[in-house]
Image (cartoon, rainbow, N blue to C red):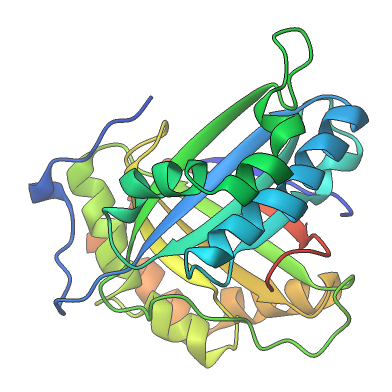
Length: 262
């Protein structure tokens, strides 16, 4: 029985063995860094968002990194433990290691981020943070800016995490997305996918993550109805070789902040 967690609202690391990872068909690969900030109070949220808006994102832009997404789960409105997601596209794996040093060497960042950087033991700007690194899927483009026409406030971003029981089973699910045609189906149905990636460092491995986007919540519901009813999905999901390749699904519906790049 699959475990499915759905989070809806208004608004440490271990690497997989290389043999378990699907191999890219091109020499060029893209990577994604997902940082999840956990906080409990409005005061923490305000301090954290002020830092991201006035210091951290400008520092990333100075490093020639664009299309940085900052998102609030809709579930934040009722959750005791609230979250903020920052998604950064990276052109090389090494950036994940070198980026913190480069940003910390930026004097403007040190000045703009002083309140956050010098927070005291008894008054931190967040409760905990988690960093997840992903590698672009072999048959998906590296990052897509979603083509949406609705107002910024109406747009819905859906982040999904699919966990598998073992590395080999996980590789089977990644194959299902790529060679199996799941990505192609998402494209045909205009899911406006932002990225697809295999988690190569994180706390819930083996797993993959991907993000789709919609004009509004009703548009999101209609897209998933069409997906579930499509003959392509029915045939693909019924294939014996793709059975039981996901053990847990987490679905997070989010809205972008007003300072997010998209």
